[in-house]
Image 1 (tube, one colour):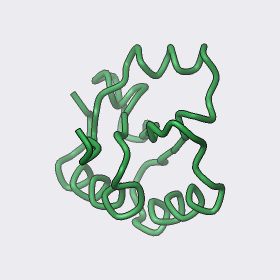
Image 2 (tube, one colour):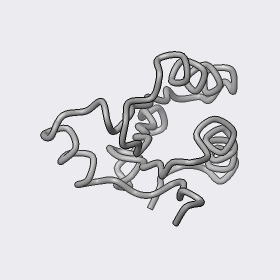
Image 3 (cartoon, one colour):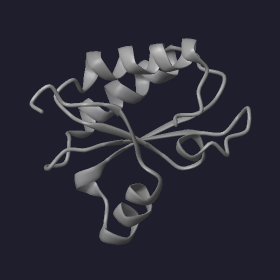
Image 4 (cartoon, helix red, strand yellow):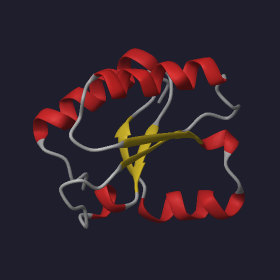
Length: 102
């Protein structure tokens, strides 16, 4: 379960589809487990095999910032994380976007 109002969920999905359409994306942390508070971050992991370019990640982050959500959105690239952080992401991770390749 992703703890977001439907209007925000739709907006987030639209931004992801525009900027990283070829990747699965997971929500992890508080908003993935139903323990979110009003201002809890939305933590997103782009499930790429190779690190995305800094420019691409910056464009994604800028799109979220421009959308003016009432909470912070943090994005990370799966390939740029280590084993212990990946374990934490997998523990709570919920799919918000599926790669069209599947």
